[in-house]
Each structure stands twice: as structure tokens, then as C-alpha cells.
Length: 510
Image (cartoon, rainbow, N blue to C red; front, side, top):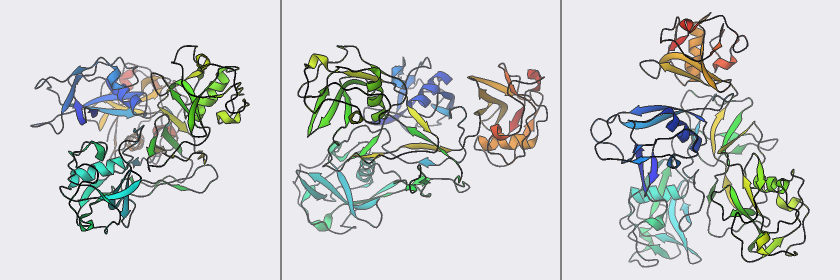
């Protein structure tokens, strides 16, 4: 686990690290509600700074920094840095997993002057050009190194192995030379945050134009089939292990919902009818504002109901319940009151699909500005169907974190001497429980190991070889052929039906 504080990524001490802390990390990342704590020792020097001594989470917080954490104390950490294993949502265990390297998944605003790469053979390489004062221009290669390249790649949302290139490697530019003497530490989010010359101050020629290669991690391009449309090629490279075969059958997409990364180009403006929430304590609540004819304005609360709030939240990408805020919850807006008498049925995809007054016609004051509260879920599961909208001029990147096949309940190994062995436990009905060893064979063990991402030989262990569990006994008489991807795909009686004691708990060695 690494945490970004004051411009630096740093670790958390594992001395008091618990499953409650791990669950908050998994929830914050949108991966699951269940986390298992781990630790990694660091003989000698630590690779990155230590930020937190302990997290002290209760387990229900939305983010790690909402916990009662303690800042790090020099030399006081004995057990290494904190690690987590996130369990996928129940019934959605990963089949084939490809990690999609989207460096800016959690970027919610555009930082710095817009950048582009020009003259490269691939989209991830080229001469660096920056947009300033209405013009695109180049950067001189004085002091240009891989740390500067890393910041450029990060700002563009690209990841991989950043390399700096000098002497107009990708050809000479033709516009102004806008920057010189750029010196980044490598941790910045944009070139604007790096030490550099004033705009336009330089003593260079275009033969010194700087370039970068954001060479992606090796892998394959991943195609997602959305609804009945043509397959969509994800614009970022994926990294898949060599033995992965991409699923051909039905898939699910685990998507980050309320956070979206926006590619900035310098001249974007919102599409007419775009909505936003302003003045709230989080991105999921606030005063409703709508964009029309180049201006943002408020909406009057005449006729407004929870059904209209539902439409606004859906338009913003939030699922779950939506409610109308009480009068005075958010500060009154300024400027135009653009809509009045909005009457949504609740099924519309956009506020403009609802009956409403003509633009700018109202009998209201800003004391009647309407506000809403959306449910701030961190992820949405879409079962194999995704419709891409065409009404927005901003480019919004879909952050797919997992590609999976529905494969039954999550599994874990407990009380082994390593992460590759232990008592088998499955997560059902909100509880971890064990598996009875009746009919338990190496074929069953092979499926458990495959589901957990282990390859190689798998051995079954019976008679509570790794100790007795304490929760329910969920499964008995499991019969796998050995080729299944997850335990949930094997033949077995209904959950909870068994004639066993915990002295018969099944285990595996992967």
C-alpha cells in the first residue's frame, strides 16, 4: 500500500495493520468491500518514505485518511510495510485478469498546461509540445532527463518506462520554443509543478527540441464488446501474463463510477445541458448547476422531487438512491437561474429529457436553488453491456479495473505458513466459512489454487490439517473435474448442507 502525501508516494507501517484497515484501502480503490492485511519486511533501507505509523480504521470508512491515523515516527516501525489483498465482490470472482495501466484513473481535474506528443511512430512517443497563450510550442532539451519524461507521461495518463530523448529525436518543431531548463523531481503531476524557465525565455534552436517515449508495459491490446456496437479497442496498453487467454464468452466490467479521468486538450468546453454539483462536501452532493450558451447557472426547486434528483445523479455517473437536499443545505448560487418547473419521471438519462420551462424563464430567486445528494458508491458492476454516450465534447476515459467471468464466491487460505497454503474458506452470505473434506481431492485443490492465481502442483489436505475454523461450514461434497476456473463452478450440494465438524475442514497447498 502506498499513499500520496505532499508530493511523495510513501508506505504505512505494518506493526498495527489489520483487516479493517485493509478493507478501507480496498473500498477506496473501488475493488471490493473485503480486504485481508499483509506485511512486507524491508531489510536495510526502505525503498520509499514512511508516511503513517498506523491507520486505526474501524472498517466502515470510505478512505484511509478518514481513519484515526498516526503519522510516522522515525525508527519506530518493526514489522515492515503494510500490504493488502482485496477480495472481489461476491459472485464476481476474476476469471482472466488483465491489469489496465491507467495512470490517471483517480485524476478528477486537469492539471497544468495541456501537452501533446508529435512526430512519433506510436501514440505514446514523440516531440513534447505544450500549449500556452493560444499556441503550441516545443521544449528545449537543456537539463532534460528521464525524471522530466516521467512527469510528461504521467500528465498524459500514460504509464510504462519513460525515457527522455534530446536533439530533436522526433524531428524539429516549427512553432515557438516555450520552455527551457526544465528540472522535475519525477513526483510532480504536471510540468507546471517543475522548476523551469519563464514562458518563452530560452537560448535554443529547434535542433534541441525535447522528446519522450512513454514505452508501455509489454502486453496485448484488449477489446471490449459493448452492447451491439463494434468492439472498442482500449486506448491504453494492458499487461497480461503470458499464460492468459482472454475470455471469449460473457464478461463483466468492474468500473470506477464517480471518478473519471479527463484528457485535456486546451479548448474543451462543456456540452449544452451538462450538469455539475457545486458547494457540497463531496463530489456526490451539492447545488445543481447546468451549462447553457456558454454559462453555468442554477435550477429552481419548483416542482422538484427525488425523481429529478435521480436523473441528475444518473447523468453524473452515480448509481443508487438519490435524494433532494433540504433548503439551505448548500450556499445560494450566483449568476443565471437557467431552469424552472423541472418534472422528471425518474427514468430519463439527462435533465434535458425532462419537461421544464424555457431556458432562463423562472419566477425564483437564488434562495430556491435546488441541491441533491447522490449515493457515493465507489464502483459499478456492468454485466457485459455498456453504452457509450456521444453527447459530450470532453473525452472521458472508462477505468476498467478487472475483466472477469462470473465464478461464484471468493475464496482465501487461512493459517498456513505462507500465502500459498492453508485452510480453505469461502465468503457466502456475508461470512467467511470453511469447506468439509468429504470427497476432497487434488482436483478440488487445483481449482482453488487456480482461482487464487497460483499455478503448478496443488495438493489437497484433510482433517483440519491447517487447524479448525470457527465460522460456518459452507460447503461439503465438492466435486471438481480440475479444469474449472473457480470453486463456485464445481458440482456441490446447496450451501450450508453438510454432516461435518470443523475437525474435517479442508485445506490446500499450492
